[in-house]
Image (tube, rainbow, N blue to C red):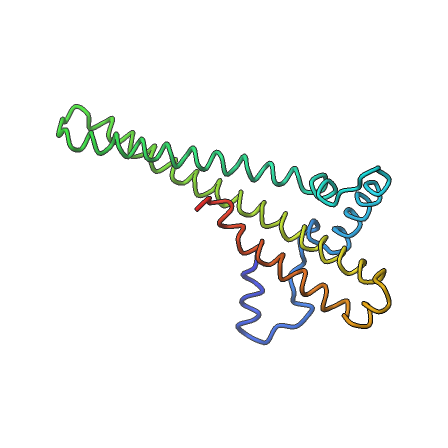
Length: 183
C-alpha cells in the first residue's frame, strides 16, 4: 500500500497531498471524540479514573494482542519440541523414520511461520493501542494546561507541557516491542 508513494518520492519530492491517510482509529479527531466521551462518563462517577477510561477505549485491542502473543509463544514452544524430535530422528539414523522426519520438518516450518504472523499481529495491535493512548495523553495534558493557575500558565507553555508528557509516552512506545516479546 505504501509502494506507490515510495515511487513518487523517488521521482520527485513528496508534498503534503501525497501523504497517506491515517487509519481511522488513529485519526486525532476520532481518538479525541471517543476519549472525551468516555472521560465525560468517568467524571460522572464518584471516583473518576483515566485508567478506567483508557481500558474501556483500548482494552479489547490489548486483550487481542495478548491472545495473539500467547499463541505465538505456544508456537515457539511447539517449534522447540518439534526440533528436538527432528534431531532425535536424524540422530537415530533409522530409515523407517524418514517419513516422520519430513512431517516433523513441515510442521516445524508451519509453526515457525505461525509464530511470525501471530507475533507481528500482536505487535501491530499493541502499537495501535499505544499510539491511541499517547494521543489521549497529549489531549489530556493540553486541556489540563488551560486550567492551570495563571502563574503557572505564564511559566510554562502548553506545547512544552505536551512535549514533556509525550516524551514519557515515547518511552512506552519504544518499550512496547520488549513488552510483547518478553525479553
